[in-house]
Length: 404
Image (tube, rainbow, N blue to C red; front, side, top):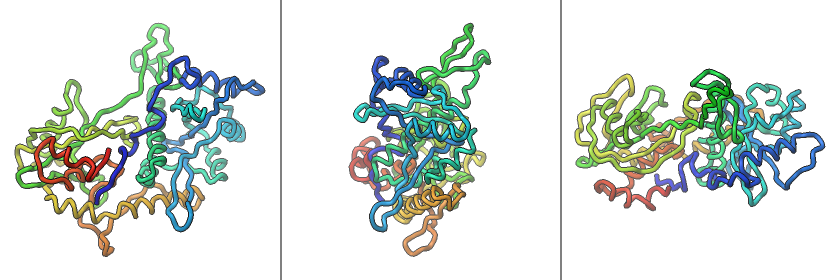
């Protein structure tokens, strides 16, 4: 199964393409001052700027669901709320909106709109208020799996939600200075923080944790090394991955992690693509998955059972079958319908795992992570290319199996 994407899930954020100059009315600091002015009762609006707010509750963005004509599957959208409407929602819950609680996400100057995120985890009454408008808080991972990857607008919104989640999680774990222990304060509309102590004033910037993820290839026997972790759903296989150590290059991390987890020695390492990953643990607000194809120099596997449940070599045709059998689009439509039911108040459960079936309805003997994951594209880029060496393989795969 070949799936073309313009960018990975959580990449391609349309609000991050350009950063306005500090004097620009759309810049973080200028936009925040305008927003604060609009929040004051009876204030004259100083400009034509409008503001949209995306609330989050416990890491889950507000979302809505809609259907097109006919029997089309439902479409998931972010639940943007105008500043005045959001202020009214909070007021009905007895809460006054403060500009300092909002985090700047970016702007669309062509539409005179600035976008903000806010954490409303402490306001439980807001769930009922928003639910009456068929808006609901949906886990970001669920939203990721339910988003139609062929819909560029929906994928752009998913990237915005990922960026917002990462910033809000980062704010929640940096309330105190790691150097002196004093409280931190938000600066530049939440794009950075600073220690409140006059003796310290240490600056703190959003955290990104880089991770290498690699498909290890046996060129001679036309096989790829796939692995399983105990937390995976049954029969799912993926790539090896691991965090980068201080003072280590990306290529060195690929070789070290592969050796530590499987005792396979890697030689050539070829860059593929990268993906922001804001759906990991909250202690790591945003991981950056840096993807590689890595070529094995040894073939005997010895699995580190503390890291992996299993690791095996799989032939190209077996991998192709695993990619072809898994009904990724059907699973995406099923989850989109689930989100629709959640927004209507029919469903409550959001932690979802789906078995993937072959066309006959039988369970697939193995399947690969879905197209929302960089692992899927590392694997499919190798599976559908001709058996060639090194960097030339990547050039041949471009335009035929993936488009990032």
